[in-house]
Structure formats: structure tokens, C-alpha cells
Length: 402
Image 1 (cartoon, rainbow, N blue to C red):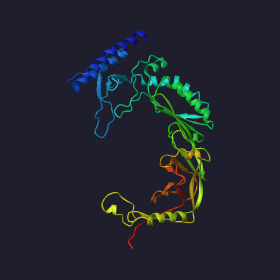
Image 2 (image 1 turned 180 degrees about the horizontal axis):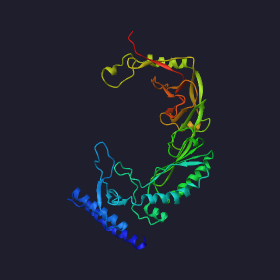
Image 3 (image 1 turned 180 degrees about the vertical axis):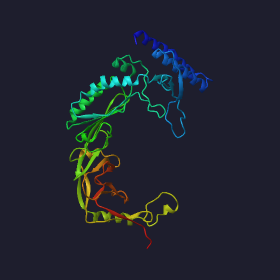
Image 4 (image 1 turned 90 degrees about the horizontal axis):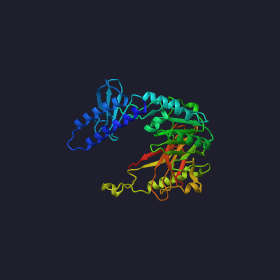
């Protein structure tokens, strides 16, 4: 399209959009009349943009997600044209767009722009497919654009500023610092033309286990050392993690923002045997009333023997542990005296890691499984230097009348 035609598109769209804005605030304008005008102007938009004459609207429908109660509250519309393409009306933006050039635009962006940016990576990587300006509605899942594409992709992208979605890139390297610099340069190039939420992962190993078609990455996997994404404000966000081994085959990583664990920060230190823990459990259990008065009145559920179970560790001779933390970790504990972490058990054999979180200041007698060996996904928990840990099993016995 020459410059004269392109100018014509913009000038003719202005009265259409301003007219619709006026319509939306006129009192007494019914929904039916409003959307009759939206449909009429959708056709005019499409004819004017592509200089067409013999084209009509053959179908109109609500463009939204089909929820439990249908398309309630969805104000966007889509209109199928007689040539097979569709025009989309975004109510909140008061803007028309269409899918007539979507394949051509997507191909040009991939071949002329994205592939060039990807070629800047010096580390092995794989990436998924992507979408530009995808509506992602159940009833209208299309890539749509308002600006006219005349064959100059860079000019078009700067005018349209499309949203890039679905792109995931995974790189493998041990040189995290240099790799992060390359990712930053990639995003700096990309965000000059597009916006959107897209993710890049850095693995220290295991890239060959993934394919372009099956590229789901668990953020908490042991081999993920960093993740970056470009958000909808076009800002680069980073998440970095480092698993440290606190015991043979037991790994932890902090999930506190901007706090990464270092080797030696957390260790399990032996503190006697489970016989000592059993005594604490018994003292806690038998120290409770048999039947708390508050329970009878229907008020606050105060702990008592009748409503709790007595916990008995199967092997009282097992070692008992507490967590030892360096000062830099202690300085990061929250108001509970805890650090939130993810934990992975990579042992080939062994008993589950259990945790007793009663402290000298509480009457809790709860023991639960922190993690089981060979679990594929990390488990979330909180750790404290006051908690006790052991590798073993236990039984729970409800209260019995004597």
C-alpha cells in the first residue's frame, strides 16, 4: 500500500472510532442499537483498510470465554467476513483489528526478527512456537492486528506494538553470569518491537531431555539455576535459585525474594536420638487435659487428649537432627523464626524425612513428612533452627478410655 492509501486508512478510522465513543455514552442508546453500529463500522473498517467493495458480514458473535453461565458480561465482538477473515472489536480499547494478514505477519516476524535475535545466543538452546496479539478466547482464538502490514516488518511492529505470547526458551550452561548478559541483550532487542510475558530458563544440565513440542519446565527443578521473563510492562524480571545439599541426597533452595542460599548455609546437625523426641512428644501429649472445658462450651478448640492422637516413633534409636544456619540465613528469618524453602530428596533409598515443629514455646505435637525420596517435584515447607528432624516413620494412636 502506498503512503496515500495508508493515510486514508488512518483518517477514515478516526471518525468511526470517535463516533463509537460518543455512542457509548449517549443515554437511551440500547445494547442492540449500539452493537448494530459496532457491526456496521466493523465492515467499514475492513473495507477501508483493504480497499474492498464486495464483502459482507456473514456471522457475528460474542468474543469471550465461555464460562459456567455463558458469555455473561462479555462486551467484545467478532465478525466473520464473506472472504473468510474476521474483524475483532475490543470494547475496552474501543478498537478494531483483524486476522487477514496474521499468517504473513507472524512469518515475517519469525524469519526476519526473532530468528536473528535468537542467533545471538552462544549456548545450546531450544525454543517453543509463539503467537502475536492472540486473543485466547474460547469463542475467538485468533491473532489480530490493527495496523496495515505493507511488507516492512520493523516499521509495522513499531506501529502495532503487538503482544508476544507463548514463547519459552531454554538454554544450558554453567556460565550463568555470561548467559544472563546474553538474555538481557536478547530481551533488549525484542522489547523494542513487542511486549508480552515470555520466559527464558537457564539449566546447568539436562537440555537434551526436552523437545520443542514438549517444553514444560518445573521452576523448582534441581537443574534450573535462573529464570527471566519479559512482563507486560516490558520490564525484565529475574528469578535465581541455587539448591544446596544439606544432607546426603537432600537439597534445599530458598524462595525468599533476592535471597539465594550458598553452600554451607544450612546443615543438619545430630542432636541425640528419637528417644529424646519421643519424650518431648509424650510430655506434650500427656501435659494436655483429657477433655478441655472450652470444647464442651463450643468455643475455642483448645488441644486435649480426647481430640488429639498420641504419636509414637517406630524406632526411638534413630538419630535426631536440628537445622544449623549461618548468620546470613538467620538474618533472613521471618517473624515466625522461619525461612520458606523448597526441598528435594534425591536419595535412591532411605526413610522419609520427618519434621516435628513443636518448640519450647508451643504445645504442638505435630509430626509430618517433609519429603519422600525420588520425588520429581520439590516440596514446599518452612524450616527453623528450633524444629527437629529425623529419617523414619511413626504411628498415631487416638485417645482410648481406660
